[in-house]
Image (tube, rainbow, N blue to C red):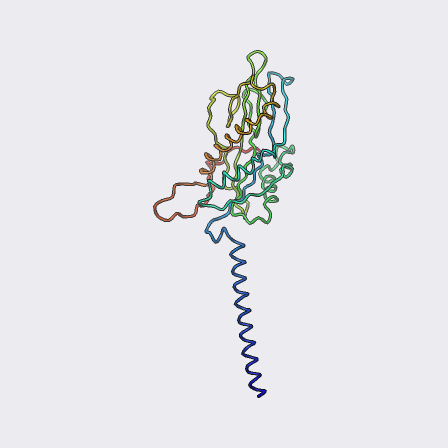
Length: 281
């Protein structure tokens, strides 16, 4: 009688342990599938960092230094980083999972500090990007930064998003709203720079004061550059320039092509020297 009860108890214990093991296995499988959705979908992850959407610059470049003026306004309320993320995701969604990595304006401060002639600008930029994406598990890191370029026939530069008044009292003033950007693609594990390129645009004014996406507006429509910044239409102009730049630039950086009739292979990024352009920092 005692031996029979012992055998039955052992059998029941085995059934309970087997059930617990199966439950634990199912729980582990579910956790793993949830933790790596991009891998399960067969896509690599592009982490997006946007530096260019933090400031809108009001700048005036005249005939002499006394005519020059500069002011930078915070524009986080414009939500351009969200729009850039949405557009980037729409362009890359067939081949990549896109993840937005928030980055405050202050995070890029080391790149704005004055450096010596032989300083390592690329190393400084890499260190900032590594710090921002730390722990984010990125296969690739896409960074969109404001580009600095020279204003023709002057020693002045114009950069990023903003409005530029250029001219003098003799020939008059010309006003352009601009969105100058520069794109970097890094390997998300080694942080090797894979590709870099200016943000493209449709150049409608061949003889304007600087190179890059911009639109000339009537200088008489607004009393000042500040009035331009306050005009809601300006946000639409800036976003239109950024939107077109993303459309023209991202497919080149990631070599996106129309899918063939057969299965489409995963896009890989290979460093190409011909795509290496002058960088803003």
